[in-house]
Structure formats: structure tokens, C-alpha cells
Image (cartoon, rainbow, N blue to C red; front, side, top):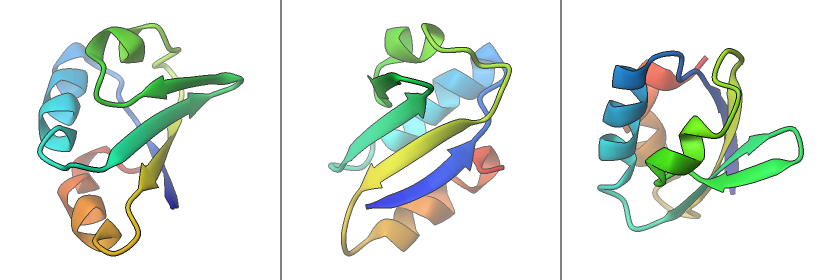
Length: 76
């Protein structure tokens, strides 16, 4: 599992993030404080405080670098 910090500070960024992340078959979690949300859920993402960076957990063992390169625009 890899962890990166991402920023989703606009509605358009959230929509494009979910579209980008949905291409992968891996599980992704967003962690904000004590809340853990499925990163592929737009409604879940909007329930978080988006004014601060959020931790993204990537549950991919072998192709994590491919995922990270696709998510470069969001990584802080």
C-alpha cells in the first residue's frame, strides 16, 4: 500500500480525480482525520473537508507507480 497527500480544492478537480481514479481496478481510500472514504465515491469525497490536503491510500502492490503518475496533478 502506498500513501500520498492530495489536494481536491475545487468541484472540477474532484470530478476529474474520480474519473482518473476509476480507470484502475485497485481500491483507494481517502483518510481525513478519523474518516475513511472510498476515493471513487464523489458523494463521499464531498463529505470531507476539502480545504486541506487529504491522505490517499493506494491498495496496489505492483503498479502503484503507474497510478501515482496518473494522479500527479492532485499530489501535493
